[in-house]
Image 1 (spheres, one colour):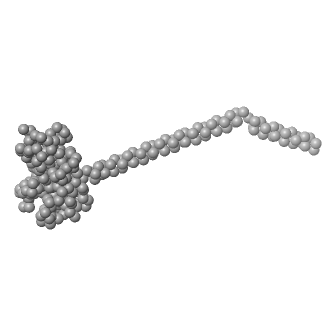
Image 2 (image 1 turned 180 degrees about the horizontal axis):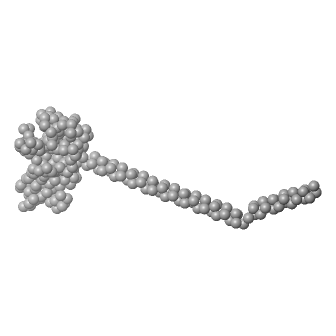
Length: 266
């Protein structure tokens, strides 16, 4: 019995020794350190990847903001400069005195004039536009038409000749197929429109057809004396009686420009 107890005590002591050896095993401690180090490296790598994704998403958001801002800037530019712009060559203004004005009397020489834009233009008949539409200066838009009167003035000392043209600077959804442009030059009215879609010539309500897909008209004045003034009124509308005035052009936009240049000086 005494021998058995002694043996049992030795076994217990040996087992405790083995446990102590297991706990204090340097190899096992080293393995734990390696695992902890790997875990830390994984965590650092995950954090680095997370930061990279944050930067990528921030960059994408910045690009989207820039795109939206650019679209807004374009819209603002279009709104600011209107659906109809008149320009003269700045060289002609500075050196020959050709100038623009919204009134026959002027204090400041202008190289550019801009008519106010109308949004959501609805088709009308040209017969609905007042016959006195050319009797008001500057912008005088109606409910569904653009009307703008300006003066081209020779403020210089020389007699000159000049050329002018009206062009389509921008158009969407083929809205120009049903557009009409009436130009009053010193009270004389001419209505312009595109040729019929079937190629059968000009529309019945038009006096002239557009010169091309982008050019509406050309005009000129010879022997334009010093202090002389040419008065222009431009009226733009969607002709409801045009067969091309359909739902397909709803939401379309159009922008015109009229440019003048001295052709000859005497």
